Figure: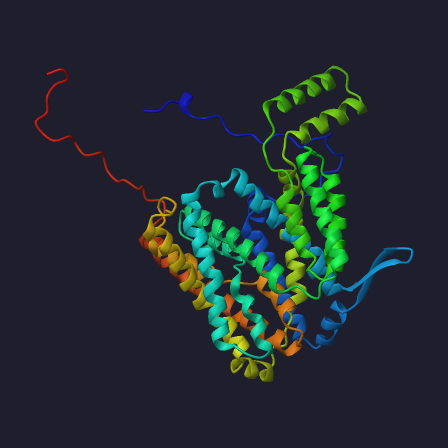
Length: 467
């Protein structure tokens, strides 16, 4: 029997910092803020940008689509100029921020997240390796020779935003454990995709620029070793690293990955928390600009640089960079002739099949190896049926698939055929994954307890204690 005193006090949201504004602007409702703050909100924007790109590329103004994204833009000082068209500013520069966030997430999970436990990591990690290898082999089975053969890496990566967004919208009633499995799989998958891009999809290399890039990477390592906690030194070196990597012929987005992997992520010791209280007390005793600045710096120092930068960039990349990337790259002509050519194109069929069949088989088989050998376990409550449904859903390859398409093919026709394969395969994987998740989620809910009913009684005869 519970009483009023047993009820926990309601969790109150602290007021926003700073004085109240004289004019109150309308804000999102709490439910809207919750939606925007999840993967579902980011994936919805990416989907909307994709639909807009397709509509634009197939409208009476289709010529303006390519013309707009081919517009050159320059930045520089004096005679030092960097000129790229708008599409490459998005693909090479803005997407470096996306891969920076990926690197930050990987570092966080390895240092203090779920990737610390080997047994929790083994099943999704081997599943990710299967999801990298089998789709590539399936694509090569359709395109073993000629220019089309260079697209073998297109179907290797899972689009984390779409997969987790669909899981949040259409998944089983308690998707958290399956979400953990798929998130870990996606992190390992991203590591593999980044390695593939670095090794196989780089252009002609410029050795002096590579040397400069190596020196800048060493500078990042030195900053981390020296215990530098402020962000601006890492940001300055990171920008210089992007310029050096871009000039070297390696894709500039790998600079973002390097910065993300090297930013400090270890939690500070308790002495920093006590120092923050000291600065806070000094500010309360005498509020002035100098003490306020020191208190703010002391508070920032209690949070790792990794977490601070990730908190700053995550929303910008999820709700800005990735949708703009979809808008810049998903616009493909879908007239009757293009679709007829795609229907018989080995590139389109290879990408489509690799995404849907290759990921489902590869991820399931790789996870099965970990489970059968005892190297890994599934998170509590996740069953084989959920694993296979999640593996099917992981066939949604969009962001990095489009990205590798741009790197793999110089021929515009091959890019269009690959893009159609990505769109068709991703939609097919999404529909099949949702159907399986809904059917299996209702039959085998993830939230059922692992042990049902009271514990078994000890064997007879029963005796009183001490007798």
